[in-house]
Amino acid sequence: QLAKNTSFITSSSEPTPPPTTTTTTTSTIHEQVAPPRHKPLPPITSPKCDLFTGEWVPNPDAPYYTNTSCWAIHEHQNCMKYGRPDSEFMKWRWKPDGCELPLFNPRQFFEIVRGKSLAFVGDSVARNQLQSMICLLSRVEWPYDVSHTKDELFKRWHYRSYNFTMAIFTSPFLVKAQENDPNGPTGTGLFGLHLDQADESWKAKIDEFDYLIISAGHWFFRSLMFYEQDKVIGCRYCQLENITDYPITFGYRKAFRTAFRAILERQNFKGIVYLRTFAPSHFEGG
Image (tube, rainbow, N blue to C red; front, top):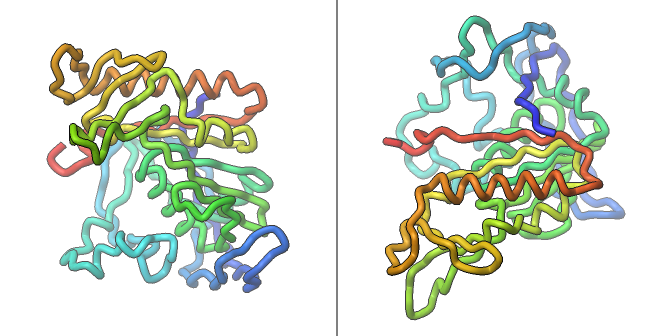
């Protein structure tokens, strides 16, 4: 089942600090620190709004979190520490045409997802969404790390007060992929994509989740070899003789079709799937 994104609006409650326990019987967790205090949130309202048509407008009240207030932002993402001279790029908000989009309300979000689970599947932008969500929710509660592995590409976080779990399954292409001969004599650096095989790293795990946010895009601009039934069918930017060079949309379309087919074939998956697309202008200059 596919669905559009839903907005969550603001409430007036103060955040409740989480417990400071550092271990459980089932997992090892990071020491929890009470979330930073903020100004009281505005009252709950419930306007209806077309979220998908609008523009970015200046927002002097932003940002809602920083590297110093949220540990979910990794060290290498600390732009200010490593010399970025300005901060105005953080002070924007999305303004739909014809209506005002209320601020994200973490407490209301928690009530909606109480007892449920959500997984992000995709590339680093999906991971960034997870990090941002952790930071936004920190106004109410910090999560506990309940990951099944130490691999940063596959993490799980649990909010005890609401029995809510979030996870990230890093899969830049959504389909089975490998770097072809990365250190060998050919030195092509091509990635091989099996466009008819979904990536098992996420496919085999989604049955337990109520919500799935699936996304991909930027890695399809790389040099790629395309396979179906384990045979080469073409490429992108490969510049190899006797190999058809397809446009970016070729592999992108097939990968998503394979991913959607894999989801529909999971008989035990009963959740809702959200597709997050991306803008061609994501990178500076397009």
